[in-house]
Length: 138
Image (cartoon, rainbow, N blue to C red; front, side):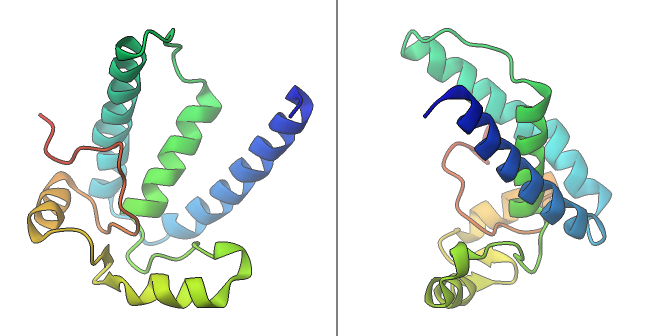
């Protein structure tokens, strides 16, 4: 995929991310916004930095666009009590399965301890299981 096409795809993803974030903004609590900015984003960046060292890949600071995307993703995942915005490209069956796996804003795959820790840190929901974020970090 050439550079121009990648930028176009990234721009489309960013625009969709912004639209969902604007809708979520109406119901977000300040504690969840603080969680995204001060906990989730810092931990994700730290994780990428240590992973790049581990595999001897040069680490670059995230661009403002990447930071905005990470922030919007956090809000969509952790500040979205009704888990809206997950459309599965129109696949109604997958949407139904996804909604059935959500209880009180959290995926049923989350343990009670993880839910408790996420809420303690300021998250309102856990719409998808995030592999890169360790909720038990210091």
